[in-house]
Image (tube, rainbow, N blue to C red; front, side, top):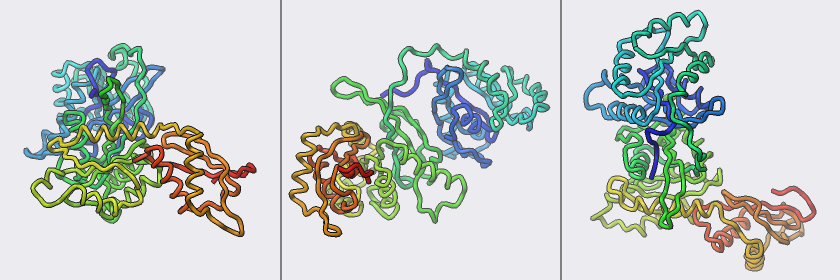
Length: 454
């Protein structure tokens, strides 16, 4: 496994709460990746994303409010963990941007954060944010006492960003000769407190994301680079995406939680593979069915992990019986791989990602045209092709027209004669013949007379 190192071109964004760190992060990466909200403590984990400016590529890390921890009551696990995430981000960074609020002026907490940054030994630039108008730029003199070069900026209105980057980017190490390897996205989804963050931490070998028994701890989608060292000596590169716990819509009230849920659903749509995590004690329920429906609607590869299986030790519950019941509940996901794991003890964690890696390989499967057509002809011979308006569906030939997921176009006499039941039958035969467990198969029908596919 590999994640980040001090030699990488990483810029960490830090500061006290509500100065606009996430807004600046979103501006630099040119995407709305971090949740921006007036509520304190919205950002908790550190969020890493690529950025580019005038041909220079680098990574930007958004962090939670650093000095918020010093006002917190002792024993607040989430706030203490947020502080640890900030310190880890600073340790990994080559340079740091300290964000302050130019309108609020220099605050004692700004001074405290600056003191911590001097101890880190990292080069630091101050971004005096919320300088929306030129007349506010003169207030930059208030921040000279921090001892770092300071720049008035407005993340919201894109003011002063160029000057800030001109100061910061020369502090980064030279760019490597090799480009960033392509990475498959693996979204880890499920209800709150099923162990999604614990699973990712166990995989990467340290506390990369915050784990807490408090529901809703993860709010942003957190992307974690991950490299699997295969038994054959090769390396395969992934991005693990930790998502907010997907609650029932009726239980989502606050705007932050609603946006977190939206981002989790977006994570499914953008993923190559979705890992659906279940709680062994709770089992699959209505919410899991809804998540499974999203996975199917977006044609995503899937692996199901039944976490906290260590709690079943010493009980009469057997994995085989549990799996049979679970497959009945989530029947429409088909032949998805199911593994019983424990993020707490490490049970089957390595095997779980080897399974995910196998599914990733199947996503890129090449279906030989000759074998593909032979399987389909046999399937048509075994079944009763649909009839409608005195006509029967006739199959002529097929070809693979895409991968990730595999897509097959069937040329027939009339695509309108196809039915969902018959499509499911053909897909099952193809999945069995080509070992596509966990991978969706998209069938399209096209008329041999040139009519559009359906």
